[in-house]
Image 1 (cartoon, rainbow, N blue to C red):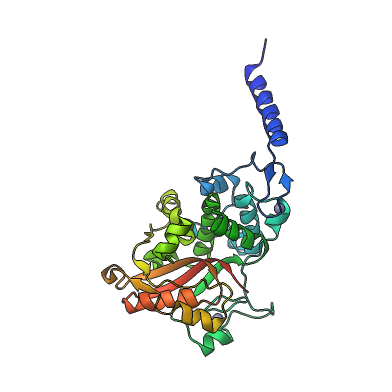
Image 2 (cartoon, rainbow, N blue to C red; image 1 turned 45 degrees about the vertical axis):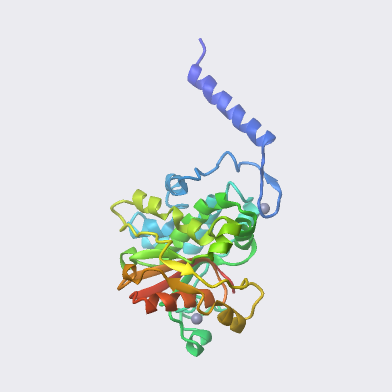
Amino acid sequence: MIDIPFLVSVLNRVGGVLKEVLFPTQCLVCRSFFPGGAAQCINLKNPLQRLKNLGPDTMLPGIWAHNNFVSAEHANNYHGNIQKTFGTLMSPFLCATCSASFLPVESPMCSKCGIVFKSRQGEDRVCGHCIEAPKSYGMARSAGVYDQSLMSVIHCLKYKGKIQLTPPLGTLLFNAFIRYWDPKHIDMVIPVPLHERKLRIRGFNPSFLLVRNWPRIFEMLHGHLPVIPVEKDILAREKWTAPQTGLGRKERLQNIKNAFAVKDTSKIKGKKILLVDDVYTTGATANECAKVLLKGESKQVDVLTLARAM
Ligand SMILES: [Zn+2]
Ligand SMILES: [Zn+2]
């Protein structure tokens, strides 16, 4: 007699192997082909659920710690965890070598702007730049260093339009959010806007795409975290500016000055805002947005970016 379930499982396995041989995944960064990418492909619509299924080792350590799902000791082992999380999230796109080149942002860093100090000794403190030119925002933090694989995937997203990268990158960003903020102390998330013309040319705003999935994550964690709205139409970029890339610190400040405006100040009055962007370079953009939001009487503006240029 034929054992049907056994036959099905064998056929499935053979199918999986054939699929890997016939359609290996090409790494977005180094272009090499690697096996397993498709097989362990994350459900892109729900990368968080996939991580949850993998357990606390690869699951967003911040969320896990927040809910006492793991010991504090485990949560403190952030470096290993966040690297593993990055590897899991990016497994459909990056080979293991490229995934391993991800560098999380770690202490000691500037308690204000989040820049990582070269010396790996000592505690977090305010850096010289922030003392010289005080920032308008409260604090800025990032998920990873703007280098190697993280830099490459951000370029793929922004300049090659690989928007399929936004659910895993958005989940990584959410992980950083939970690590540094108590969600109870944030009232709304505002992505840094693009100028309307730029939005038409590019077709999407990467900063918004990074937080577009957040409401779904809040929904999934229903009861554990407050639901924070993502507001993409409150802040507008009204001045057409030259790209900040390639400009020095002073030119960046000059270039971005008066570029933003708040459309409806009644919506931000007294609110604690988390401003989100893809990359923090000199902080000129984030600081300019914070100035405008605070002028509109928001209570506090903090900044979260996916990557931090060092
Ligand atoms: Zn690679
Ligand atoms: Zn600083």
